[in-house]
Amino acid sequence: MSDAARAYDTFAARIVETGLITDPWIDGAPRFREEPVFVTEAEQRALYRAAEEVAAVYNELCLLVADEPALLDGFFCMTPCQKAMWLSSQPVWHGIARADVFLTAEGPAIAELNCDTPTGEAEAVVLSALAAPAHPGARDPNGELGARFCAMVEEVARAILGEAATRRLGFVYPTEFTEDLSVIRLYQRWLEERGYTVVLGSPYNLGHDDRGLSLFDIPFSILLRHYKTDWWGERSSVWTDEEIPDAEPLVGPLGAVLSAFADGRAAIVNPLGSVLPQNKRSMAFMWEHLHRFSPRAQAAIERYVPVTSRLETLHAEMLLAQREEWVLKSDYGAEGEEVILGRHATDDIWRASLAKAREGRWIAQRYFAALEDERRESVNYGVYLVAGEACGIYTRVQAGMTDATALSAPALIR
Image 1 (cartoon, rainbow, N blue to C red):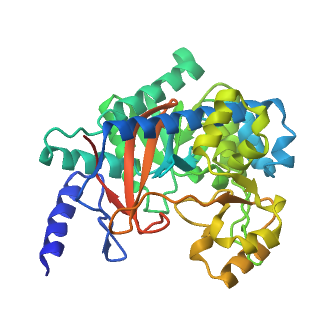
Image 2: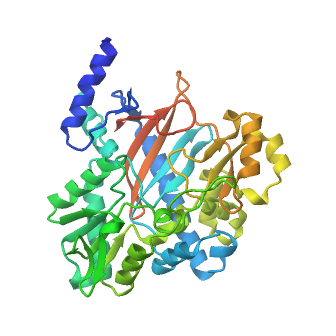
Image 3: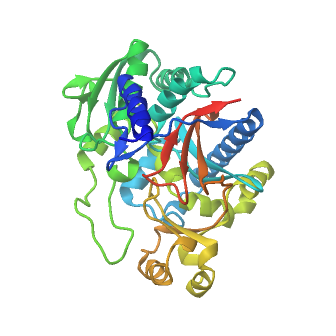
């Protein structure tokens, strides 16, 4: 075994000992990097400002759409269940989010805002905490993330339920998948340390009766949702030449949640209204309807959000001729899935992608060049926002587009 492999085994063991992350490898390769990403205080301020200002833009967008419901069909092409989710909480959409920010030669640029079921919190918290003691003078940016998250949950519950709020919380997540178990463990630990009783289950374990919502027949008043909104509703492929199994919406569980919320018997974090801003067509709306935003929001869009359009509004011949200048993204794709980077695609793949992209499901976004180090790697700074305020950083390092093979690294401020 090489020295590098032995060093990583030692590091991986320290990660596993936290009890939060049990999978330091992916397909036999390391998931993490022990070497920190050092962020200067000036860079932290710039990253936080970009994330907060773009979150404020998303809030304006939600207010605009709430005033013009025809946009749900005409612009966002939402399904009936997606519209029901949005209408249940409009214009409220936010609790915790992660803005994926890159540093470029022109300043910060935001690739997307993950505001539905953001991930990476456990990796961010664990890695920074492990790295900080070895770097005196450096500061862990994630030390307050847990307190801020739990305070937000408590405030949401108090605002919606008042005196009916309890310390029993139902945590709904896709129990058939293992990828996000670390964030499930982290949230559960945070909440139980603060006196909550946490009941775990999937949407299929939900019940609804005169007591309100329940999981495994245990009633609760706060629903912590780590099950994507696009999975609750109708599902279809973003490609015209394929179909997906289990396309039907979760009518029973979704109906139970919507009924309990409408009756004032349940608070939901994140709100189901996040189904709208999570849709990447939101970024196209920002540019195609730029004039409808406030002057401050317009400035933030032009400064931080790459030029974006609905794919169906752009001429295919232009996109073919300018392949290297564009990136295609599906409406609800995540973690690099359903992202076609023009300059990394062959002409044949690019042409086929344009031909088979389902209308109403895609955007085209101008490519931006992130700053790279001597290894040609760039850093995806995932800035966490709780109640609109930045309060943590999850850094992933990779050459090229960020996907599941990116190395998660500690973030430290110096």
